[in-house]
Image (cartoon, rainbow, N blue to C red; front, top):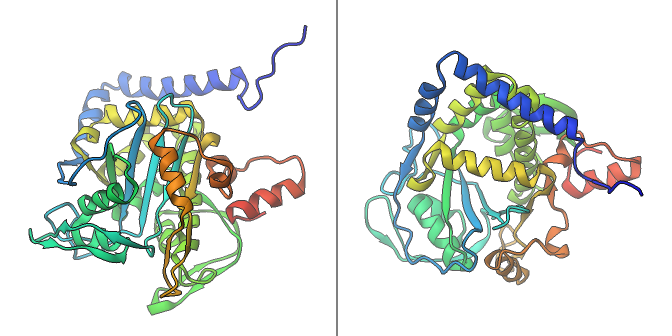
Length: 367
């Protein structure tokens, strides 16, 4: 009788080896007597805040988890964009959904240039902005993460369980801590817009933190210069970075792992319920259990915004996507079209050149 097939699962020896690598890394900290001190230090790095996000939508599936991830690109001289402080800039917003059974997960990127009906929000000085038709990322500029969460909840009907703001100023330290991140640049990038002097040659190579910050911010020297191309590039970079973080080279190196965690936690602003390592480790374990190949990144369905060719709007199909999240359902075939996962940018081996080129075209990477 033939043995059952376990396609898609790594060999048992590889899974065991990965667990051993993790245990060795933890033991190294325990043996040196620094584990407790390290945990307390890392937890102390995280900024936990309570925000007034307005009415909270009902939750249909209790164990499902919805996390709103925002990138804070506040530049030098500006304060952090916590509710009640000086608002910064946010060009990156991803709604991450984890299924109740932790068998699938997907992140939905929300274009910053999409025109939406924003609700009224509190501003940094305590006054109320009435809202109305505006660009999506105006919510963050006006009221920080609180206004962004309120906007997403009212527009989608989805309850946001937790939020995380990643400060870009600490982002480059995270990249440097893991020895850089591999990127694939399909066409050379040359951008001298406003003396930015950003240049990336065509090809596949590893970039450091400063380069990574320019890479995920860049849009003027790429394609049509729109935010939509940058959004896909950010998804690809995030996928590659996740793959590098969970690789044996990072997990087996206590110094590298600590530097990454120190940089990551120092760059985080979260809600109180998410501001301790236990919650973040739980999220990481859930993603590991699901498997990187099954954690997909997509963009909300969008279409042209007729009054302004430089803006977009959510397409009617977005309602179907929000409904799937509400009822904890996996992505439909139409939603999955063009989806990206960490394995797509981690040197995945393909059977044929045609298959490799098709995968590259799907995610906008090098063939």
